[in-house]
Length: 258
Image 1 (cartoon, one colour):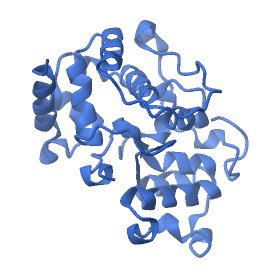
Image 2 (tube, helix red, strand yellow; image 1 turned 90 degrees about the horizontal axis):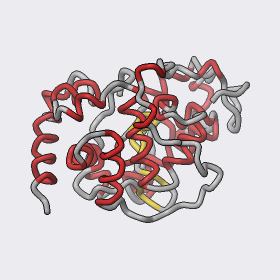
Image 3 (cartoon, helix red, strand yellow; image 1 turned 180 degrees about the horizontal axis):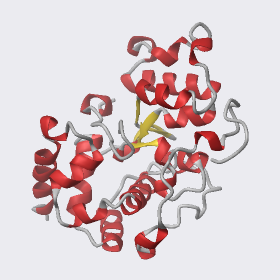
Image 4 (cartoon, rainbow, N blue to C red; image 1 turned 120 degrees about the vertical axis):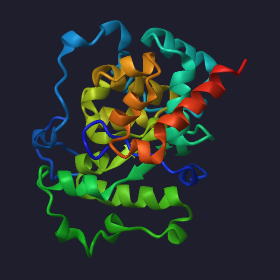
């Protein structure tokens, strides 16, 4: 997601792997960091959006895997085929279809280019932390036990410097949505986005549903226009990486499952 809507492919091996006042504080956020799009609500069908704020004070992690019933319910609300949503999951999270690496810790893809893009907007001078927080620039898979362990070490190091920048730094969950797109997911702030991503796969599914409605991607998923969807969801390299053809194959697989 080098541009607003672009979500890079989350490597399958990894699977087997706010508004506030002070952005340079690890527990508060700054409006100067709010770079997400303000969506014109007149183009969003309210019936397609879930209430992301419901029960958000409940932070209890659920290890429940998404079921066909979950896909059916959200797909019916969006007016798409469940197989179309499952195709996106397979491309973003891999065939394991997992949303979490460990209890309460969703799959993440830490992206240093995103960190560099938003650091100055959040009032963070990264060079100050090279010695004290070296993990931000790279963490050893060997030291942290796995690729996801290393990704989380980087995220947590950055989050200890600045909470908002830390959450912005990564692409989250089974749909790999950038933290800087919290508003398009219809959450009240970036912290709510983080809480919901960390709570359950069903929450991740609901955030994805809100995201594609808010960003006007729903029509491409409804039409099964894989190239149109992938070009906006995965970026201009989608064709080179074959996102659209892989998504079409995944859709056919789930469509034919009984």
